[in-house]
Image (spheres, rainbow, N blue to C red):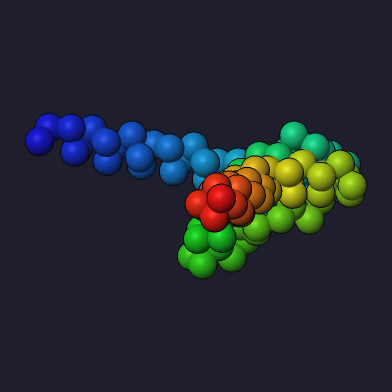
Amino acid sequence: MKRRPVLAMVGLLCLVLLASCLPGDGRNSGAKPAGFFMGVWHGIVAPVSLIIQLFKPSIRLYEVNNTGFWYDLGFWLALASGTGGGTAAASRRSRRRRNLA
């Protein structure tokens, strides 16, 4: 039973680390816009950003100060890979085909 407090502390630490690099935190500006890798990171932490935005409206789901296409590409690649990227649907289809044969 001593594992539960340790797991809770690790979870809290992970949330703090995630929250330190969320979109809208003031790190990016017009002079230093977010690029591809920040887009990837913001796509990965998008679910956390959405929840935190309920309590702190300055945190955004998407960084406004970005480089355009490259930021968007990183953001959407991370979102697609985090949701399975369509592989779940493809595996269901192939499983259905094997069961019919």
